[in-house]
Length: 213
Image (tube, rainbow, N blue to C red):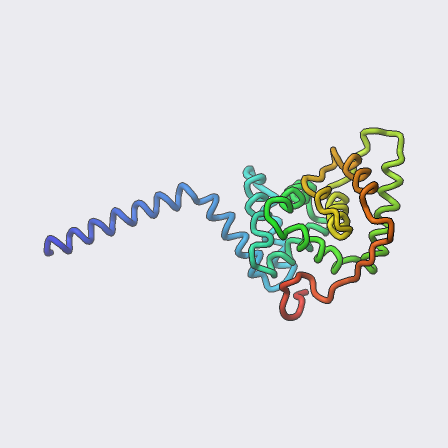
């Protein structure tokens, strides 16, 4: 074998070893990225749900949830729809809802995207649902127990409402521990007129085609 050919073979072997070592060191991160890819490529919600549930397990669950939430709003509308639907389902953990809620402040445009989806999936006209939620939240705020907290699912409702009312600043980093003060400040600053919010025709602003089952 010629010298230059031996050199190329040796170089290829070294490069293969480096790649193999890199894959081994980053195998957990690569696994998380692959599972996120599977969510976005799922043919229906049932398939996507199984992939999302993988992120809710394992010793590295916190890292898995960060990876999952970080992909939301990055250009894959199907992924966004599946994850938003799962976040609103009874199967979703509070840990994932917390990660998703806090993630809405990481990138400009995520909060209005969530508010759009929230209006689309509302069980009734969004303005009516908003008033029902506000009536319930007013009741909680009026309780004498100062440590009353609400769930992350309710936090996500309020974040959408704050944005839709034109007061998105109160939605950033909203949490069960600070909701009461934020809610009262929002109440004082919101317009006196009722919100006029209509249900959009598609689940996300950039959605194209039929909505998968």
